[in-house]
Amino acid sequence: MDDAPTAYDFAAPPLIRFGAGRIDEIGAAVGLLGRRAWIIGGGRSLATSGARERIDASLTASGIDSRIIATSEGEPTVDQVAAALAGIASDDREGVVVVTVGGGATIDLAKAVAALATNMPAGLVSGSDREASLDAFVVDHLEGVGRGLTIAQWPLPVVAVPTTAGTGAEATRNAVISCPRRRFKKSMRSPMMVPRVALVDPDLTASCDPTTIAASGLDCITQLIESFICRFQQPLPRCLVLESLPRALRALPRLLQQKPEGEDPQRWRDSRAVDRAAMSHAALLSGMALTNSGLGLAHGVAAALGIGCGTPHGLACAVMLPTAMRVNRKAAEHDFARLERAVDPASSTDQAAAADAFVERIERLCRESGVPHRLSELGVKADQIDWLAENSGGASMRGNPVTLSTAELRGVLAAMF
Image (cartoon, rainbow, N blue to C red; front, side, top):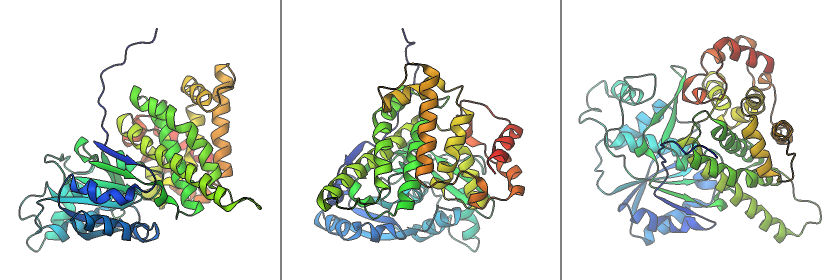
């Protein structure tokens, strides 16, 4: 008989609207929360996803006034958050809903702006030192680098619309913010930061190129696996992983394939739509899984690779995943075997054999997705290994099943060079 579940919390968007074509319902979703929309979009995704015109039409039809207050470029930084806050400092916030359309970076920028907009002290942006004041205000709300200030007042409500199938940021309670000047990448975190509505329309991912599909898809898969084996694992997130990971592992390779010669075009489009839906659903569930359990080695190192070496987050996770699984192979044998049987019910009944099969399955997927397996292929220099090992701590690493000292992690990274 299994032990009874221990006490736990579970945070998730109060309203999830999932399915092809749901973007046309964004006006109604915003109308549940307010009467004005501040839009934060991706630099390219808002246009290339085909969402902009449909969003404008839906908001207008619902009587929602809207304007763009910020556009994200790359992963969000302290400077980007501060600039967005400066632009809205004197604006009335009554009835405002933050609508964010883009990848995980865009959604994180929006969540940070929405949270800090309602927690700014009066007069923060006045005077000659406004830039320094806003900079400090943002940093002071990030874990481990400032004064450790918390989100005390409820953020502006956020309606999150992802245009990639990867981070699951539409369902998480944190925003990852970096500062290249100070060389850190940290989270702003609060249960109140979970978006009020996650509107997930898989059709919006149709414009993603193969590189983006691979990186975001493997980020999603990394989140599912790491949250399942995390030392802080919880029962509901594990159920979500068991439901979504097998579909994602089937869908991602198919999305990376070219149309076979002679394939009926309509059949090809229909199958792609099914696979996009599987990946968007997996990304959504991976966000709920990680925010209610935790992550591990791959994400811990990925953060350092991002700020120290400029490696995009999804790619960094994909590169680190096979190594992280090998490091945790013995400690996570039971969980790896369970995941393998979820993917292939006919897999070996021997625990060790099933676990090995799962690790090999993921290694094969990474190879077939074109992911580099050496840090040097990412442009990492040999003299950066020590810095990476010393700066790969944080919440993600604390969740890893195997505790690694800095020296042990340095050895792991050196072997990947």
